Image (cartoon, rainbow, N blue to C red; front, side, top):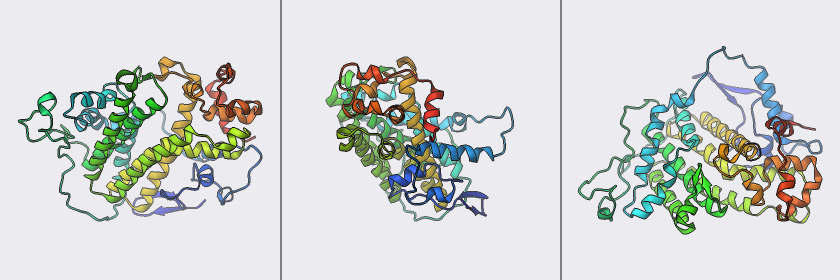
Length: 416
């Protein structure tokens, strides 16, 4: 494919980008990696060999592209955590301040998952994308004078403050989201707040998912639903989404607000897809290309949507050009899908202690994730087990055969 150059920055971007608002899942599957793929293979609904792996085609194309890139100098590596280390240092503190509630029980449950250190991958990506796009050409967008500043307190100090030691009724202002350092001039205050919002939305989804999955552990500790009960866990998740919505509205950017609002809807849609597989799979469990399409659609909604749209939002807040905004979205989408593929693999290849939660939990819940789907492709006899969602005695043990990471990736990338 030919690429279009942006003379002002020297940035080379693909001449065709996928719109964020309307996605054809067949094209999404064929367009996981859009750079340097032959235009004939990217035509609308191309024909494929029987049982050809769409992800394998994408990976093969990426490997071909990487072979032509110059080799990195030996001994040089970049630690992304160091690049935005100061911002990440204050991330959890600021999130806990955003979640402050006058009700002591709600305050405790809402902040429960902030006590243990998560990977913070989503806010890390937002901060890194903010830094990267700061070096690209600016594109003037509308501006407004918000009635609230990003750092204004969300909680009213006078509400139930006498029962909550975190809130002092004599204090009229709050230290919410105020960084104790000058910060990187390339990262705007609104982009820092966006990073916090993405973590709030992600944590809310964890609270809800743990109730749906009857989880007992999360981040090597007891899950919130086990610790406080299902009702409180669900309400705490709703509270996090409420606080995220207020913080999002105060960014005073309609396009960014719409993006992150659709993420919340996407999470619910993806969960419904995971709970209910296609009727055709249940009645006639035969592996087809549509099996992978369904999996990729569900994965985008549950995982890649938040990552891709938050990367896009970071570029928008930095007034990046439309080309850079679309590139940020495509990067987040592909990374989100790849992240879930790796996460699915780890469920089969690492221990409970390494994973921080029970391994093999997806099979126990009757969920067929990527490793099993590729095994099903090669072993049609697994179809009836998938159809009945591994409900019979011995089904889980039958399909959970140890497989190395190398064997898994060979199955993923094998076109034959």
